Image (cartoon, rainbow, N blue to C red):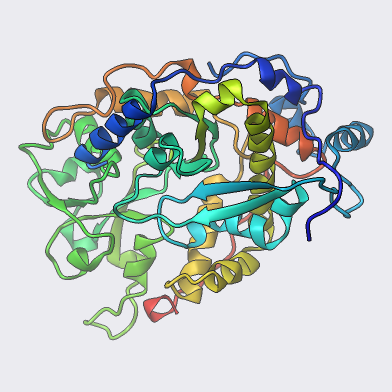
Length: 431
């Protein structure tokens, strides 16, 4: 039910956004060029003084903050801290483009919808599924959606090509990309890729794979046989490739859900060697919330919506942190084709990529950003081209909306410093 009074999120801190120019870029024709360039390749921080609590302060007090300050902030924002929510004079319709199909990778956004967090912030959010042919950042740049989820290097490539988009919340703090091989293949580090058939998905998902090769002194064009891999583990299980690209939360589970023909039982972790790209130092930032740079720079209403959307999404992810089984059920009910045990595994592994968030959920860490940019500038693909040809500059991301959302969420555990993963038992086929 839509409520009666306008939710006011533009506190004294947030109001500063009206003066912020978050990004600069070209027009829609350039955005179209960005789409073409991205697909052909297979796919400042704004300066505003705010009154929001610093991330260090949030970390020091576990994200709880001072009760009186919390109540003042919440009241100023129109949020009822007694649990009754806020009342809305009107509700803003918002669209979010996912980068893949419905699964627990996006559970926090579905939870925000299911648990009424979006409604609390006077938002009616439409979640748009992704697919192989959909480039989320292009959808955003073309004005087809209000916000989009995308891996940072892919989005920066589109931005360099003309898409005026800005990272306003880095939900995943760590990379979840792996390279998985059978234990008897002897592939324990990237240097072992030499002379092997190495799978990757393309579409901009291969950057960490090539970065690991380069770090090991291998030329991906001559020292390795690169194989275009489907978004599954069939090629590995059937012996067509020596090592397969996988996400911790999806494809790795697929091999552990498969039956080992030699034993008649499910494969076990010891049957495989796993190279974690985060651990070998070439991890790149992945799922982030991207916004329209032109609208951020000129549209106060959009700035306000962005703050509320980020806050509601954060509440969704905090709910999934504390209620993984419930979020599994929410995603399955949304029509995911993956089974219950697979989705619970995915929810648990996605939580590992988000929590703990040292500076609070969504905060864009400068060192992680710099590593992602450096790899994008230095890692050549098979044609010798790099993801980026120049530094994207400080306007490619901003923490202002994260900090404003944190202020709205003051009193909640934003860092998840005490979070622990659960134990998940996988079933055959992920059921």
